[in-house]
Image (cartoon, rainbow, N blue to C red; front, side):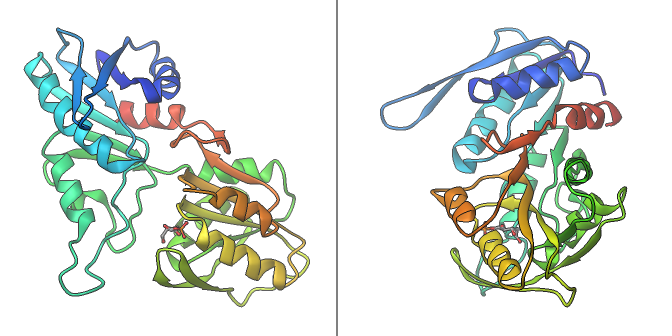
Length: 294
Ligand code: R5P
């Protein structure tokens, strides 16, 4: 799929510029935002749009950005777009993939379907797919492609460690440690995790020797950082020589990055799917390749 234009918001402008370059110099235009005193949003798109448009919108700070998408997508169609694709580097709401308590909404299903109703195609990076195998299951009628930053994180780690032990901090992360390890033959395994609340998790190490190893914890997303903090603390208590962290999506709310460093983690690396001070892996080339392949 070759779009005629890339549309982006001011807060993702740097990534938009990199994506436009990676797509061979695709024209790039801005959606202007105005927030009214009561919190409502007004968006202003270019007055006339070509038939095929790619919209860039990551969904960190998800609720505001979902509303922006719900306004921007139909507005783009009114302004001439016939085929609207979404590059969504971070697809939020994918972790609530079952009703853990009776009555809980399965947000993954509902948000995915909502987006599928707005755009014709979607490209995203490391969506949290655990209980479903692919986005096809929750995005009917929308072409989509999910790519992973894990191989690029693996290459980054390989350039810095000779024989690291890659650990996923929970069972779900086994898919990302496996992908990060694939090209380099790294030893890898996953911890087990129990979550009791937003900031209350317990992590148990797998039965692989950790003492003396350079451990790199690899996960898709760090939010409160508690999962990584618990895993890192357990690794250091078990005698790990060093603990570094590599994640695709660095949300790191509040002071969680400082807390992670304070517990003894040496380096924290992430992709730039979410703009963050730890970003070292550029996702624009990955997104561009996936968009071309759609
Ligand atoms: C869930 O299993 C994810 O892969 C992450 O491990 C989790 O979302 C991290 O959350 P937090 O940083 O709040 O512990």
